[in-house]
Length: 364
Image (cartoon, rainbow, N blue to C red; front, top):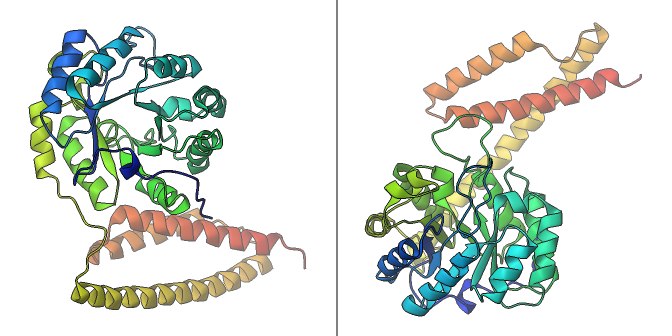
């Protein structure tokens, strides 16, 4: 199902520029000097459109730096006056939203923890009702597409039209090299479900470390994101929060220099013809894959009937382990991605067990 909300394109409020939307600035505003000096350096790069700065920082545990508080809004106002750039900050609850509105902050975003609670999102939406601000929504902590879409719908329902989604990754279910699991599948589903919704990527929070921000940023552009939000601090070694993932403004400029911006399409007729040919082959192979799955399903039915006749349970763990090892071995020889094959056959096997269980339990 696709949902076309009344959402304005980025071009309606973003400065005219050939570069995608780039939001940069400190994870947290710590002192007025730190905030202004970082912003001054970032503003020298014409590719930076918005200066971000955390004023209230929702931390997992108490005792960490939880933000400078409302005075940071005054620093953002000074940044806007001095640099001429838009400024933005996170609002974690209705009170934050009220204060940010009074301070006339250009861009407000709802963080992952807040998106997780429909009650919090609705309270923020009620405060922002009818305003002309840009409001961005980070994905919830878990890859729950309905929760993410629901937050955007709540904001749209109160008349907000300058809406943007931010993909910042999900809490990992196992240890990875990244701070948060990228979960590109959820982004793709959001893009398909809300085709007119601008979506930007927050590679800083996905990566967790500076050395991985570049590869995540390039991946985002390769997948058609509309922009990036990257954290930058005048001296990351002294940062009071997320020091490992922040760049100095000069290092951020070097990172941006290396990124390749992909076109969504091209007018080259030869490219179009060749692409159509290759896509036709993909379509044919996909049809063949489904025919093979259908044939496999018929064999699963026969296995289920044979097990039922012999009073044997549907799930055979030893067979499943042997089958997975064999499939992964073949995948290695064919140079297929092992993780993909593992997930694929887990899904196939789960459906096979479901099919067998239903047939075995069915009364004759």
